[in-house]
Image 1 (cartoon, helix red, strand yellow):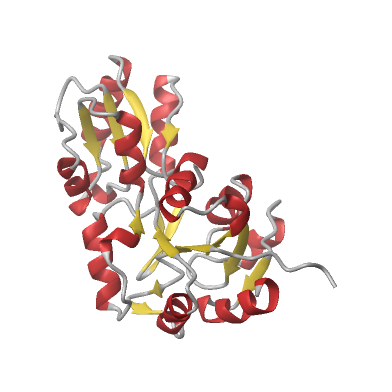
Image 2 (tube, rainbow, N blue to C red):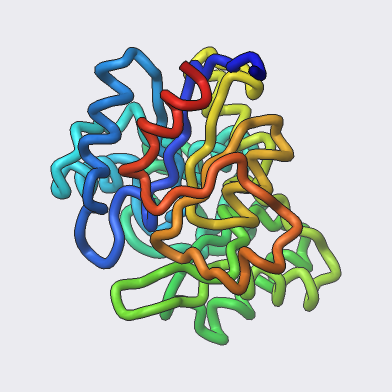
Length: 261
């Protein structure tokens, strides 16, 4: 029998894993409670770029999860480390601005040293994209909070920030620095916060490329859930293969017990 390897930390994607379509995934709250009861540290990692850490935690609490802001990691956490106080233009929406302001990042509308691009939704107008384009041509670095292609909204799949980041790269000839998943730097920040090495960690997500491919590249074990944005046709043709394929996060405790405990 193969020797079991201990898992000392779990990273949980949020949208599509802990909740889908405006409601908590059945068994999700129990799975999180099981991690806590068994002394397994966890962090919630999201590529959501329209909500601050506080707002994400409040949403999870609204679904009945006992998760506070300190357990939530979103791309702005990594972006703040990366831009290190530079004058920053935000092409984003929602409460995510709070995280940058709380960190003392100077937010500007012109003359930026860095442009931070997240899911701006309808804010991705021609005028906004052109303004960002011009600042990049003038020397600003492109910092992508994420480069996902799409995400699962309440009424179906939605374009994410990735296509718009790609458009800016194409137009300017510059390459964006991606600070959210699947960036190894993002995963490293979360693991350091838990004091866990990649070899001791398990990433649970619904995106075969961003969650599974990114975590495997960082040296972690992975579990793909068949909720959220999971699509079998994408899974079947993907070069990535998770260590575990689960119907939902509700099956996580059994998978950990069978494989790692």
